[in-house]
Image (cartoon, rainbow, N blue to C red; front, side, top):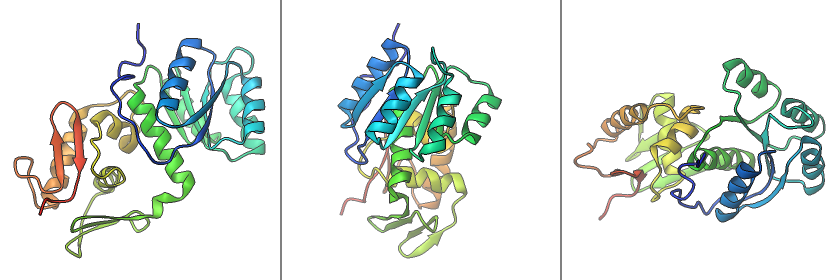
Length: 242
C-alpha cells in the first residue's frame, strides 16, 4: 500500500534547496521521503534511530531536520529537546500522533512544524519549503506580479499602487502563490502551508478564500487576470497577458 499517494504527482521546486537530515525508523517511509526530497534538489542524509539522528545532525550541520517521534531507541520528543539544547536548526516533525495536545507540546518544545501520517509528498514539500524559506530570511521579500505588489514584511498587498484590504488568511494565501509565481500550486499544498491542516483539511476552504481573494483583486473565476485555476491540478498566480 502506498502511504504517499501523491509521491509521483508532485512537481519540483527550484528554490530554497537545502541539506536535510531525515530521522525515521520505518525503512519504507525513510526511503520514499529521502528519494523524493533528493529528486526535488535537496541533499538528504538519513538515520533510523534517534541517537544516530542526533549524531548526524550535529556533525553535518543541516539546514533542516525531519524527525519522526516514534523511534525505537529514544522518543522523538526527547531527541528534539536534545537537539534544541545545542542547536537552532529548523525541525519538521512527522508522526502518527495526531492528538492536538501532542502537536501543542511538540511545537512548544521547539519544533518548527508538525505533520501527521499518513501525508502526501505535496504536503511535506510545502512544509519543507516554508520552513527553509523562513530560515533563509526570504519572507521579507517584496514580490511584483504585473500591477500587483505583495510585501511579506509589512503583510500588505497593493493593486495599481492602492492597498487591498485582506484578511490574514487571504494575505497568507496570496503570498504563498506569489512566492511561486507562474507555478501551479495544488490545493493540498495550500492547505498544508497556509492552514497547516495536519490531515489535509477540506479543499472547499481554499475555494472559498480564492473566491474572496479574486473579488478583492477585481476579477472572477470566469474572467481571471492574476489568479488562474488549472482544473484538476490547482491554481497559479501570474501577470496579466499584455
